[in-house]
Length: 220
Image 1 (tube, one colour):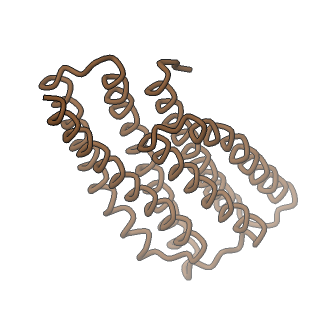
Image 2: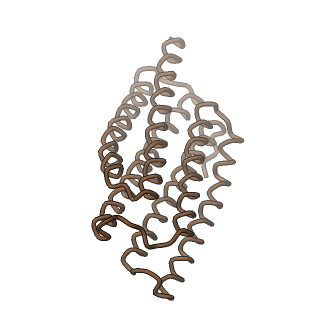
Image 3: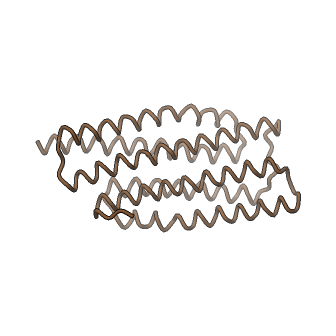
């Protein structure tokens, strides 16, 4: 019976790793598309979100099957419960990557050529923020698979850095509004994109907190 349970747990871990890679690609792609103002890449990100949603359903079904058929003990039950909660945050990360792609498409249509007039400092900060949240996500999934509380805590600490980047971007954009450097509509779009990135960091933090719950039973 335990061997069967371990086999099902391995399937669950594999599915979580796969979904993690899918949303990691979505974050990277949305950042690259934003830097290049690539409308075709934005379309691909939006289409890929359906596959992420399907993977979420698959994981939920695996978790329910494990609970109903295997009747796991307390520690195992915490890991399954954590997985159920994690995939909700993972799905939201995929949604936010799609939100960035939607905004990028709109920005490209408004500007015609898709040429950016917001300035290199903002683009540089957004690129840095995209890299940071991608790292947070990868490490939060790794913490679950490896049952690593220390790594999970590092992810949680990293969220302050991402929040700081968001505040810096917001400050720069407000200055542009005050100095009338560029169009207000485009500034609002960039502020929304930065907010979506900041929310992805929050979801990665949530995943890390569920890892700590799975390992220790402590829930923030």
